[in-house]
Every structure is written in C-alpha cells, then in structure tokens.
Image (cartoon, rainbow, N blue to C red; front, side, top):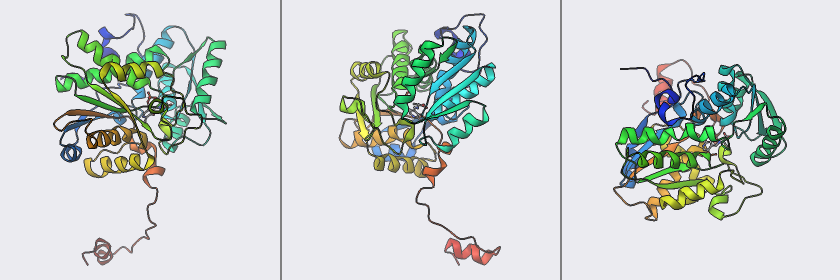
Length: 352
Ligand code: F0G
C-alpha cells in the first residue's frame, strides 16, 4: 500500500507539468465516493456522493489550485489573485502559502461564509472586500491581472485549474470501473462542470471507460443564468458559493450539457435547504448549502422522470458543511442548559 502522492503525481501523464517543475501540493484528491443509502432508497437509483469537502481546504478547489499555483510558481510568478465567493480564496491562500507566494483575494462584501473567511485569514492572504458581487470581483481581477502580468489569475478561467479539476472524473471511473449514467453537480462560474466533462471525455477517448454520463448542472433559482439562458444582474441565494450571475465558462458548460444529452435545472433556496438537511440528517454527510444543489437536482430530476429508476448517479458535493455553521444553525431553538444531574438528563431525553 503506497501513500497517496497528490493528484498531479497520481495522474502525471495526463497533467500539463514539466519534468523539472516543483510541485505545490497538499496531497489533495483521492476523495471518497460514498454510497448514499438513504438517497438510493428514496430514488430507486444507485446514488454515490463524491465528497469533495474532504480535500485539504474543504472543497474541490484544491484540485484546480495545486495545478494553478504549481504552474504560476514554475513560470516565475510571485503573486496570485482571485475573485471568490469563499472557497477559491481559501484554497488559493493555502497553496500560495505553500509555494512562498503572495495571495490576494477579492470577495463580495458580507456574502461569504465565516469558515471560508477564517481560512483566508489564517493562511495570510490579503483580503479585499468589494462593494459588489462575485461577477464584479471577477471583472476586477481580470483587469488587474491584465495590467500586472507578474500576478497570476487563479480563477477557473485559468486553464491549469480545469486540468486539475478533471481528475475528479478520473477517480470516479477508477472506482466504479465505468462512468455513471448521470453526474449531478452545482454550477456557479461553471469551471467544474467544464472540468468533469473534460475528464470523462478524455478517459473515454483513451479507452478507460466505455460510456459517458449525462451531465446535470444545478443552479440556485435566484442565480440561474444557464437555466434562464441569460445573465442575472443581481443574483441572490442562501447558497453564497454559487451566487453568480454571469458564469465565465458559459460556452463550455453549454457544450458539456449538449454533448452529454444533459440538463441545467434550478433549485429554490427552500429545495436546496431541504436537500442540505437530508444529506446530513439521513446519509451522514455534512456539506455546505451550495453543494446540496446536486442532491436537490437529483431529487427533482428523478421526480419528473428525467432520471430513470435503476440509474447509477454520482452527486458531487463540492464543499464541507463546517465552512458555513451559520446556515446549519439557522432557526435552531434556544435550549437552556440542564443541571449536572442524571435525572435532568433523563428528563431532557424524555425517558424520565
Ligand atoms: N460549490 C461550491 C461549494 C463552490 O464554492 C462553487 C464555486 C461551486 C459549487 C460552483 O463551481 O464555479 O466551478 O461552477 N465557488 C467559487 C469560489 C465561485 O469563488 O469559491 P463552479
């Protein structure tokens, strides 16, 4: 049994890295593909969760960031910049620190989950809050990096990000021995759906799987430009990670949907929260609200028959639930503490 070397080393022959490069890694990847027993039972499908919250900084962004920061470092860049709803900034901050590089992050004012902000703080990133949303932040980041070429833009418009993130599809096929029938995932800026589709098609082209999944891209109803077919000027959703109105990888996401016979769908915040509670409460996997979009999409697509009973479905759950304790504790009733007394415990349990 050999220790996991990180995804660049694990899939080195499929990664655009040079032999003499220094690899920047936190041993990301190799995340578990967990059978979701409850979801399988209620859908009549074979449902698996690709648990990306178990990456080093708690989201799938680490797959892209090991490649983006490695590439930047070996190209002689000294700093990285990103726009972020939180996870990209947490990941960029951690990998830049490992590389000895400076990291600055542009975040929408007041709209990122507390755990993600804590990560950027702890990894020493320069945090710049912007009076605008993610789309404004990305536009700013693109302008700044166009003018200052010594700073590398590490959003998913950076092709190295996509190369790293495509490995999640490889891992799924490596475990299942084939591609699933349907792959469901949340869509915000649309880098990840682009990356999965690249991974699945690459593996099939090289004979490592004999089929491709239908891609189910799920957006929040208040931030669903790909579903509407037009950008959303003022995106709003409780799932702040995917509060995005103008996805940068629009065309690639549409290609993934069309080429796979897939679908975009929207889920209301109410449905997102229902799925968020279901996957934690019944299948034991605590994900962040945006991540539950894949599960909400599965449930809706199964209900209207787009997914047939008996299908094998993988839902990517993109980020760890611990990143956003505020949403988890929403509406939790005040409970007063009991005395140090077994009788009081029995009373509280209703067995007194
Ligand atoms: N899920 C989570 C938890 C995310 O953080 C993101 C994107 C997505 C899904 C959507 O992925 O953008 O590739 O379609 N978060 C970015 C960020 C925007 O800044 O952390 P996508």
